[in-house]
Amino acid sequence: MGVLIIIFLTAVAALFAGVFEQGKYSRYIGILGLLIAFYVSFLPELAFFSQYKSMFEYGANASLFTKISIVITLLIFFLGGFAFSNHRSHQSELYALMLMSLCGGIVLFGFQNLVTLFLGIEILSIPLYVLAGSNKSDLRSNEASIKYFLMGAFATGFLLFGIALIYGSASTFDLYKIHEFSVSNPKNLMFSMGAVLMLVALAFKVSMAPFHMWSPDVYQGSPSLITAFMMSVVKIAAFFAFFKMMTIGFLGITGEWINIVGVLIIITLFLANVMGLAQSNAKRMLAYSSISHVGYLGLIFFGLNSLSAYNLAFYLFAYSLATIGVMMCLIWVEKLKRETSYDAFRGLAHSEPILAVVAALSMLSMAGIPLTAGFMGKFGIFAQAIKSSPFLVLVAVLGSAISIAYYLRLIMVMFFPKESSFKTSEKVSVTYNIIAVFIIFAIIALGVFPDLFAKQFGL
Image (tube, rainbow, N blue to C red; front, side):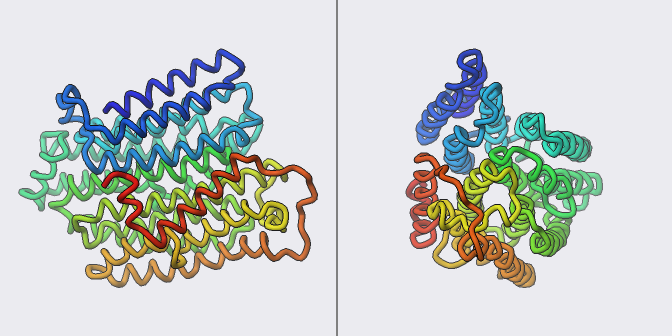
């Protein structure tokens, strides 16, 4: 809980820094606060916070997912100086809202109670409704904000209805007492209906098809750095909450919901990858790519074992690194060209080779090409699921094969154009090049030496 307090105080400080120099210092305050929080995340919790463990407990899994979320948020903040250059008048609000959303994610990592789960989801989501529409002069950004808000409210209704049914049958909000009830009453109809409604709500939050309809428009319409935040940090928090709720709270009625998840995985992988092939806009293609990864992540529910949480963390970290790698390239191209079509990237490798390499390597990692972190992430989850559901693993492998086509399309445009569309002397900043080199190194290092992940995060 100490990490949560530090992030919250950092958000408040970043917000009030906007009074001075139009938020010039907010980013630096955010980076400093995140570094302190990352250090504190390795320290044992104070005994004082144990009195709140019935609602929130900073255990081993909460610590691991908090650390990877802080690292990804730090990378996003380092990219913010250039990405938010046209938001000079309200930069402080943007950084503060991202930190507030991260607070919601940290609450989700440690929730022990359905009330805490609800609060975490709302704290995570409400700042995003504002962030999605922060580019006030862009109608697509306005549309993204209202669409995200409406669909988020709709999903919250399902969540609360499900919680009401769970409480009505189990007479408790406590996650572990719900677990005990599910084990001793596996045929309780009201309880099962509540579990399915909560599954639907959480599927909305992670954008699992067919509950994904908000994602492409919201991801495309939002400012690109905010899109990167939603595709990485928000995805980490929402999916872990999904995983924790289903595998602890509803473990006793797995048979009631596991087949539903299997069908959703098939729909997600087929729909997202086919739609990804049909896109002519790189940002929208990446939105469908993000949806497809929820399908791969869904395999974590099959063949559960003691390493499941670790496999999930590794995959989410590898995926988030790759997301930042390709999105930083998109941010620079979008600033330069005012668009994100495939043609806007034509010949990028000749103008900015480091940026093109990190984008290409990131997409290859997303596709699961060997010797990348993405390959090891998929291998861990697929190996876990193959004994209990070989058919779903086969579908996931086919989905990965399809995804290579739309990733390669963008890579070919960047590296093998008929003619380059970059005729400018503007160069990428030193910060972007440093982050690009770091991501290249991290993706390759984790692909070759996956044990580095456990060592670096104190496991």
